[in-house]
Image (cartoon, rainbow, N blue to C red):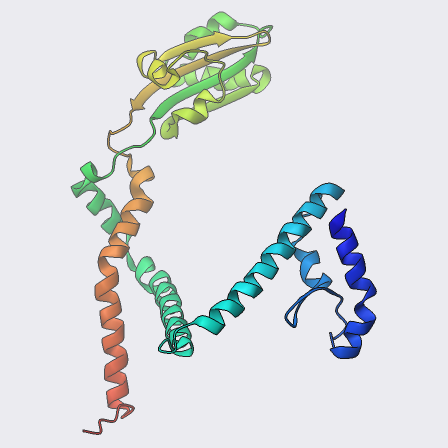
Length: 281
């Protein structure tokens, strides 16, 4: 409770504080060498939903950190070498930050949008070996039905087949009987996402799925049927739809230097034509 006592003492002394300094309507909590931490500064950063004890602990840590920063800054300001021009360093950093922010925005607006889908696809086609999977992917079909669902023998036959009539029969069946039905023969999905849907209790589930393309499981309430039509493991080439954003970022980075050199050259030539640059030598 010591923090509450500290705050109470500080608040009780606010009358004297206000006589010495105008706090502009704010409530001072802590003072360190003429620097004030106000209640209005603390309230917005206090996490919502904390217990009373956690709020006290958070407040103690926040005030301690605030005071330490003030003290360290003052100590540094008094002992910084005379040959360090802080204002110049700050100005240089400010300029660099502004230029970097502008360049990023310019690249996002101009360069990124100028890279066509064809360019991305062609680069991917020439360099597939550069884009490898960190996590396995599969294509297939999944259906989850209650143990009491009808026509389970037909479900066992349909889910193993990739023929259109079997798929259509399973889709119609799922509308009335399935708890979950996922068709992904036409797209790659993460093996992890699929494993999250089935109660597969084995030591290496991803490897199991790669070797067992038709999986039937059950628990106390449901049957789970998974048919894997295609599997792509770790280290194999990423499918285009998974590599696309990576390829585009790579192309942007390759063009970034030349693009910015052209931007700077254009700015320079415009300044010369408008006689903004004056040489005095």
